[in-house]
Image 1 (cartoon, one colour):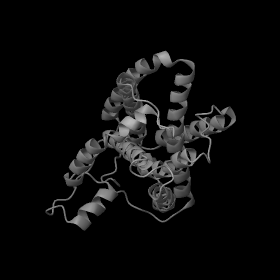
Image 2: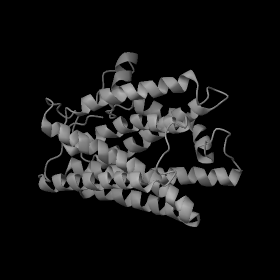
Image 3: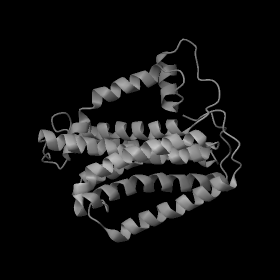
Image 4: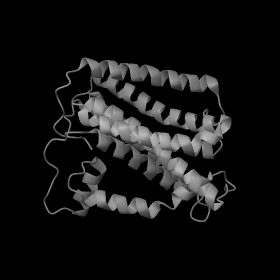
Length: 290
């Protein structure tokens, strides 16, 4: 586990930049999809295949990176690339099967994503019993449910790229499925107690995870921990939009707000790359925080 340190101005800086960058990464992913759908929908499936190729190339490139920071940075972008492909594959399937929008506005691909629930459960079950998985939440469940026979994750991680990629995809997938189940009118509904519970729980947990994140002052650890932190807050963004209390700027093409998001992402990217280039490239953290 990456060594947790006292909160300092340095750790606050790394936390703030990491949160802005991960949030910007998710937002820009939405912006790109909306712009393609609005101005050139004919390329979306070719774009999806391009994302798969880019994602595989990015993952392979981490094989040659010595710094856990660079591995995590590129792993995040690989995760976004594969998530693009995931959404477009469901979009294609929805179109092929004739899936329509629901009355409350859920897109066909998200309606289909809801039915990946059992696949998600199978993958999570494997992670739960796999000793080498170091996610804090899974550690907690293993301990409380007494699932392991004494084996624990040991030894250093040589490449955080694939781990970060998989974390990005799994966390994003999990919370989308959670929201789609909540929005289902047969099960709960967009204004049900369940969705209100998800909203308030996500808001509360975000601050707790941010506090935990403040204890790390390296972009490798901060970026990996920022993925679930930002994605949990993103639940509230999605729910507020569903309640018509927030107009998502990437859906309504609000260029002033989108420009701020893109600008924040560009600045945080510059700061991360500058920091990673300035660090020694011959040191990898021996233990992970996930």
